[in-house]
Image (cartoon, rainbow, N blue to C red; front, side):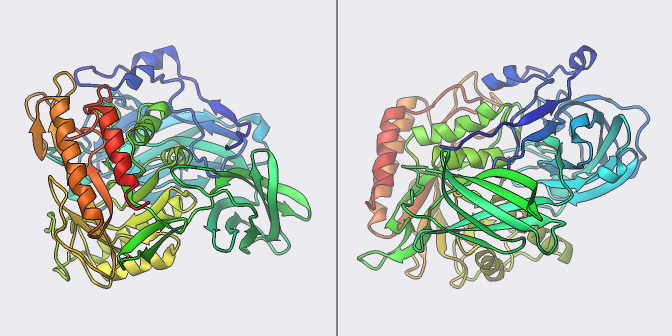
Length: 603
């Protein structure tokens, strides 16, 4: 169990007048958590659980906003209030407007730095902003970032003044009129394509640090050597500075090690407690940075001893293994969309709900589909105990926006700018999620959507993080020399269409059993699933029939499967749960029993 550290959080309060300017419409379905959203206390949880500090300040809440043509100067007068961190197109933003490539979105607010932070450097953090961002503090441009799914920060200390600080953010997001990764966002939502998400969509916050401080902590387990390796990245460290890592089981220190700043720390772990979905044990980590014996920085996090690998079984079929044992991975396609917040769950409880319900339904894995979640979602998976396949959000304006299942097919041609941006954002995603033990598979491409240089991208991914498996193109164009996995998609029923004896074979998507439930639909008169039924029993019967067919494919070669999908999303009604999360559409116990049989099929 993870020991909680005492975190002092400051939350900027919203005036009553500001509150009255936030009045989201209720003309579409919403989750129950939407009613709990308080503009004075929006998503108050610490946003970076793998590396926590004791002091921070949350800047979520009501900000001024304006939409202006590209290139316009900062406005003197703003259009109104927007609730950060909800995208401007979302219901919970209180705005619910489209941005478009011809416009830029401006944000403004003020904040004060707590007096107790005097003498410290102040870091300004953004969880995620879609897509191109410029940040100004007290009318000074302090930095830019390009990328819609990963955190970024700036040291704003030199530009702070006495008293109140002015913070302005400008965002441009062309959605599918640009080359950037965007997942399933489109300017014309229909079918499997959804509403655009523009601007700030994760928590904005500040924290104080010493000039010399810890920038990242990345633990990597080696259960065969009974060793935990920890890479600690530091800022402004110099010769003679030292890093210390303490590994704890509850409050008890079980191992510790020290190294010069910049050196990898290798820590023997005796009497290992292994992490798995069945036993998701996490060790607490305390990481300290010293200068001449004086503590400069201290962060809390966690680590797990677990291994993901590939090995032939007794029949010579390559199988994925978890902790050196054959392990069938089975879970839903999880898109992470919300009717009220779009990309952003209304509360942390809502974010956790989907993970817990997936586990309750008997799954042991989630494929996070062409989206990256806030850091807290992955910590929820670490703590609840569920494996994650992480997709790269698709994009690139490729003409090949369809599914292909053949070898050495034609690839997309990307501009140098598009290719460079893909590589940058993919690296940032991997850097973000390396510390999370739940991540076991990287998926650079989905269904040939913008798929390019597959062999090279898969090889780079594997080389950059050899501790995970690489699924080079889920349901896409397949290459014999790319990655660890051959991933086939087939709707609606699970069948084998291709096998490769030199790779792990998986069914990356199947299912899509639809059920439209009146009162819980995004568009009451226009919805679809791959197949549709009228009752929960009919859906469950079909689901059980499919799991029976899936079980028959395991002995022939499949080592994992992904069912479409966790929840309905906008026009799609093929979720196990309605879009508003108010109705479980299947008979839970029957589905849970069937899923557990699949998960145990290699044991």
